[in-house]
Length: 289
Image (cartoon, rainbow, N blue to C red; front, side, top):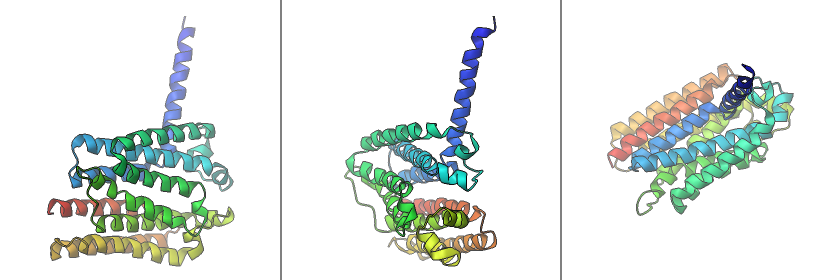
């Protein structure tokens, strides 16, 4: 009598295992952080709740497609370097499941982005295109940082372009996003410099080396706070100084973490926190505009 229950139970277990594996393989920390930043940006410019949800869903599915394609493309390299933090390497998710998941997420983000309107949709998809270009080979060239500059420069533009009348964002919004993105690129790559050298990855951080990479990371993160603090013309001096000082302290802390523990991702996690902090300051700025 219990035999008929075995197949559904096995299917349920397999589905749950696959779901958990895909969740772990999507690079959950940056995926959640970028999606949260997108939602906060959309709220800051005054989109309706429905449009905020739509934009956040478009960004989320785009980030899922980038994370899954990254782990699929890098699966052989991750296995060769013994990356225990990669689900496809440890067997927590089948490698063959990553392409279908990535392509399904890519198709979904294309539809959701189109629903925002063609202007905002193109800006949202530019972030996705930059991530895929990075995964497909740009990461191994001296132009690796360009994907982050373009992608995260476009991210703040999308909510503005989704507003009625499709206003172009103020210059400091995409500039802050581009600088944060470039800083995140260095913070993300620095712990993997040795593995990348052993597998022939020669992106911009690898070419600069650890010391100059830390300097570049610190400079771009601090620059993002400077632009956000003093770029908007109608911001009070007190707010500008507060934003700048907070950014400089956080960037300096990231530099110390990267120097003291080169193999740790602590600097990258702090970079995500800096992005959230800058978005909070962005909300203050836009609320006073």
